[in-house]
Amino acid sequence: MIDSKDTLAIRRREVAAKVIDGEAILINLSTGQYYSMGDVGGRVWSLIEQSCNSEGIATAIAAEYDVPAATAAADVAELVAELAAENLIETNGAVGGATPVARSSSKAAYSKPALSKFSDMAEIFAMDPPLPGLAQ
Amino acid sequence: MTLTVSCVIPAYNAARFLERALTSVLDQSRPPDEIIVVDDGSTDGTAGLLAAFGPRLRVLRQENAGPAAARNRGIEVAAGELVCFQDADDEWHRDKLAKQLALLDARPDVGVCITHVRNVWAKHLEHERLALGGHASANDPPGYVFQSSLIRREVFERVGMLDETLRRAEDTEWFARARDAGVTVEVLADVLVYRHLHGQNVSYAGERTASARYEQLLEIVAARLKQQRA
Image (tube, rainbow over all chains, first blue to last red; front, side, top):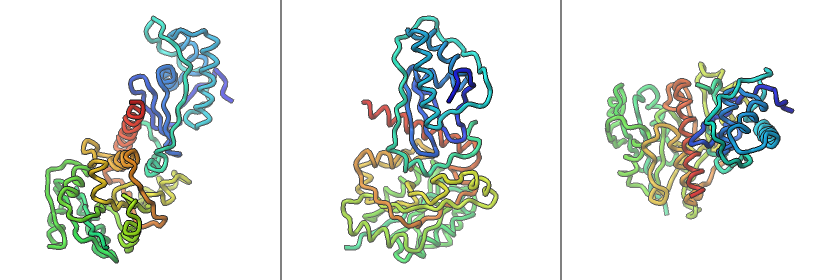
């Protein structure tokens, strides 16, 4: 169970990830499944990359999107739990996390972030071992 | 009816292991009808080694353009109804082609036959193999790679040729396209290909290259998602 103050970390040993045009694209190299999260989800992923915690991420989302703080907190917690359940992220043992670097000041339209999962390439990706020390 | 088989082998500075790879092709219980080696601008002893094999090989030479381009040049001149590939580092089980041919002969609906592949880590990379544990790649996975494949020539017309802009993951990208085109890929359960990983493979030389491969996989996935929404 991830607490909102726990610092989040990407499981770099097994996950290849990139944010392209605001969309987060992830590959779990252990299972061969790949995922996409658009716009709000992509922003959440970028903040996880910066080692934020759920609380910090929810604050940033509420500041950047037209959404009540409570909704942002609930939706972020739900997405973080889902990412953890898919073994894409984990807590690194620390509490606190980085302060999110704020984006533009005008609020964008909000939609609940969703994690889309695909298994159609799983066998084909099985040839690619997640090499230890994947991060650059 | 027995189908004719061309074998295409891209080779770049391959002198260290090429003889082993060629021997495993020549020693097949059912050898290919022609072997086309594409020397992709080698600067080591590859050319001399190929010359020593004489007329058993047809050698094409080009400036370095990557394995995808090298394979495409080979496919373009291949005379066989079926095309298979070998990598300069790898080995085949003696009966690989015989078993794959039997399947394609019996199943006209199958466009591509692949086999299971054993990844063989060099001694100095043993730590890598151990770190992988139960991951599929360390447990003889199905080989969605060209060196495991026997492909009907017309499949290339349907799917297209290899993407020459990709220096890595060109097999992953092609198999994804083949799947989207509805090509039937049949997997033989046996391990008939031994893929040697020694740190100097195009895909595995150093972590920087591994990261580059993952970059390319991400781009393949991104393109796929974009296409599905179009």
